Length: 539
Image (tube, rainbow, N blue to C red):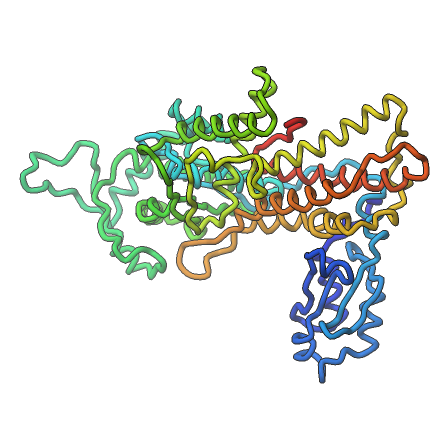
């Protein structure tokens, strides 16, 4: 892109299209299917036009205005016509290719400004005493991915709790999860919470149960949560929340760690605002609501209104011989991935390179298994050997395989350049993008290259709850994007021969295709980075 030119994008183009119709509501639909993209890129459906214009007939001056659209980030229109389907728009496709792929990149982007807000992602599952299970992994992997996505948008992100248990740390390392291992809260913070507890009107001493000699030493008091909820008029809490019977030092340390993370978040951003997202399984939701209320009672600061609960649906494990730990789950998937790879590629070399490939494929399989479903929905883990394959089009292995195909393509091209078979790829500004006429090329450009920044923006959105405590986030967006990209790229790559015969009259098309696929490769790499998955150069 030219220095100083705004990146062409869908959002800017849709805003301009809506502005040309002079209507506040969005009437336009972006086409995405190969069938519809053969003759249009955007459509204002006939039903919507009927509500906006008398008889559904769009005035000629409006059509002229649509055709003349321009401006920063707006894609130029080739033609606009009214048909039986509605108002159809087709873009100037060679120009769109040129604007995104053809111009030299500008200077190195300036560092992101100091964020205006911060987010603390809290995973209570990492405090489980019995060891991690697949159920615990789901919110942890979600938090790890969400943290990376938020950071791409310049949001300061902090993860709690610190993982001090050696076995849990090893499991997270196997899954390429980057999580803090040392806690930052101080004894003074716990002491301050104890003092607040001693003054708390909702706290009372614990009474000895009948037949019990004494109250356990580690229990400080009990807190009447329901009274607090009713007096404060809070909504969305479980109606069965009554009295939190066992306030222990451990619970106060949990709050102290959260409190310290919030203070760090507020100190590192301009707005001084920090939200807390409790990422919990549905089984943990009740206990986390108790801790949410206890924190509100003991530290009624402004940030307490920014607590949100992102609840994960259940994880159902089929065909388990016995309860399975997270470590066993990883080792099982690794063995299955190795066996599936042997079936596809033959006996693998027993070297360090292939060991790393299998490890990465295993992590990809698990992450896509956990993250490609909406977080509210149940996921089912089938532990049968046949459940893992390198052939399925909706698996992490399939995504990694297509990323590796791109690496192989460019490695093959580079070696051919070194042998003198092909000339080096010219600068993008010298390429002829009118050669890109195969429908799969516009499909890759229009459905993936253009909207990718908006996919990340949507995945990073944490909208406030419409009612109550729960929020819904698009945590599955990046995985679904990568799966669909892999399917469309694979279809195109199987159909089109990129590196053709070394005849000069064929070079223009080859160069344009390589430039397009280089951008596709970059999208793969950027999206996989939010999953802590490195691109593979071989499979």
